[in-house]
Amino acid sequence: MATIEVAGKTIEVDEEGYLTNLSDWDEEVAAELAKKEGIDMTENHWEVVNFLREYYEEYQVAPPIRVLTKAIAKKLGPEKGNSDYLYELFPYGPAKQACKIAGLPKPTGCV
Amino acid sequence: MATPTAVPTLDPTTIDQFTPDAMAGVRSFPAPPEIQGAIGFAPELSEGWEARAIARMGELLQENRALRVFLDACVHCGACTDKCHYYLGTKDPKNMPVARQELLRSVYRRYFTFAGKWFPKLVGARDLTRDVLDEWYSYFYQCSECRRCSLFCPYGIDTAEITMAAREILNHIGYGQKYTSEIIGKVHRIGNNLGLTAPALRNTLEGLEEELKEETGLDIRFPLDEAGAEVLLVTPSADFFAEPHIYSLIGYAKVFHAAGISWTLSTKASEAGNFGLFIGNHQQMRKIAHRIRDAALDLGVKRVVVGECGHAWRVAYSFWNTLIGVGSGADPDDRYGHLLQKQLDHRYKQPSHICEVTWDLLQRGAIQVDPEANDHLTVTYHDSCNVARGSRMGDTPDGAFEIPRAIIRKVANRFVEMDPATIRERTFCCGGGGGLLTDDLLDVRIKGAAPRMAALREVVETHKVNFMATICAICKAQFTKVLPAYGFKMGMVGGVHQLVSNAIRLGQNG
Image (cartoon, rainbow over all chains, first blue to last red; front, side, top):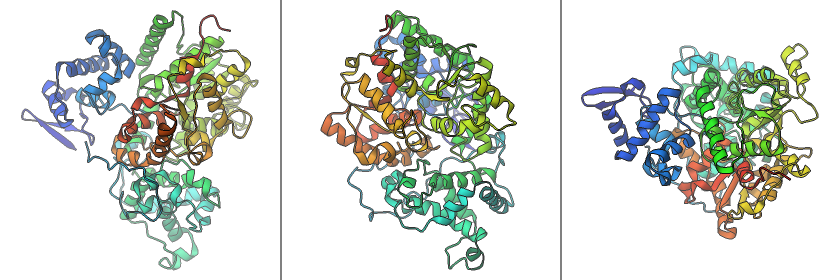
């Protein structure tokens, strides 16, 4: 099993770098996961990550992209409520890369 | 991220340029024991796997006489060699369909033919060793089961059946692929490949209703679990989750709204996809399909309609009749199959493809469209492999090619075909089908997309095509991911019903 080191703690991740135990997540872990993805976390990144976590807590799944863009539009303004903006923040794709940083399981299927 | 993929240059391909073992190291993540065990396979390889693999091969040869014919009939003529997108894109000779099949065929000869048992070296028969097994795992997950090579085979060998048999043996002995096995587990546990829970699904659909109300002022509905609806729509869960998929979902809803057809989605059957096909496992295929029958019976619908999903349509069109009794063909002792057959309205095709529904309504004038709404687009159409080579639509043999195109021509003014050698029954796979649509195979996916990308580039340059329509969730996700690698915008790909959605007249219809 692969692991990452954060602040002296050893944390399990799967082959693709997603957290094995969702409860291991905290902001330091997120920052480390982001670093591995080559992403510098800004406030805007955190907005997305925090929304993903809130949604997951309620629905036990990552939000559909449209739900995410609508939520971001509400928080950050309509010009940011689109997937182009999300791809700017998370170039590998908001669904997967942002989920990884938020400590959520990878969305699977035809996506 | 892994090493960046060397994106193919799209130069005309010649068959004599190849790189032995170029893709030998490529291996998608094997399924962990808990995922594998959860769907009834051996959790992992354990002592005695060789004998179990050969025994399973023997069973498959008994159950599926076509498989034995396919294994015996090949004369290595090579007609298939340069027909595979993965070979063309990777240049690894083991991705020539004949060579990929030989990985299994050589083992078959060793254990199941007279010459192979007694003179293995003479006939190129091989023992099943761990190296051979790893080679199977690597190369049988570099095949998307698209069956383009079969089209050119003078013996009509269905090469996908050989890939499916290899994957079934691998799964049986505990060497499954994480991507497909994890998804099959989710379908059984939650109802769809994505793992969208019922509350999440309901929330998404309500959100869409609100959005369309704001946009159009109309109550365009996305009903969920509504008993008594006329139509049960079964669509890939990506339609609820991803872009551009969701635009087609909106298109289906507008079609039903404009035509005044009552319809519903189902939480139980919130997935059209059936990955049981990809792994060649009939029990899984049947079990996954059963959810749809259960939902149709529970909801009392009169019609079952399938959304834009390539392999789902193959399973629905070609296998649902005997698997679950949609249409005709249920076993005499299959009580629920017969119940469903009685329940469904046979004035309509059962099942119907959403394109058949829309085309019928357009032809009858039951829905109206303004094609000018798509005047910003010059459209081409990518035939999805499982629709093109595994199914039909309408009443003519070429319906699966003509109906989607007829819809596009009706809803958009500018339509251009790609190179005839790359469309209709000769279409190239998107590069992500058959269980390969996973990040760990992105390198293969990018390379495998090369033939389609070359044909697309041609019409982009000569006709300024800026939209490639398709009717498969895998194609949509795959192109969204790989188009940028070839310098195209990811938004260039979308569904046929995305175009319908733009053009359809709502409200005071007709």
